[in-house]
Image (cartoon, rainbow, N blue to C red):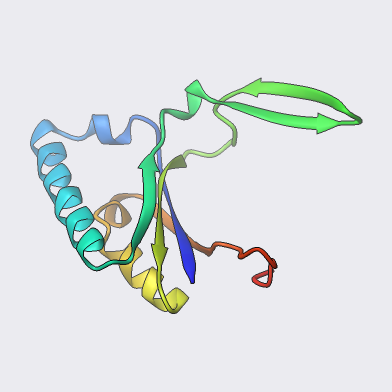
Length: 120
């Protein structure tokens, strides 16, 4: 089954770290990504641009309304994601706990619905 690991952080939080911490953290991310890829569980993923660069679209009564980001009134915003292939949510949670970002920010683990939508 596939799970999405949604990584949340406060915009600018990474840049606010001292350069030595950012360098060390990037080395940890490289090692984590290599291990995840070599395990065969990595399906895909990407870092996302700053929330201020995006838009939210809502259609109400057939009228689209577009709002510039950020989208939520929250300190932490969606920063990126991984898609992993695991047998259980516990395995996906273990992977999320190994991500260096989990020590600084939050990672939400959610099943990816299959075509039948049986996960609902």
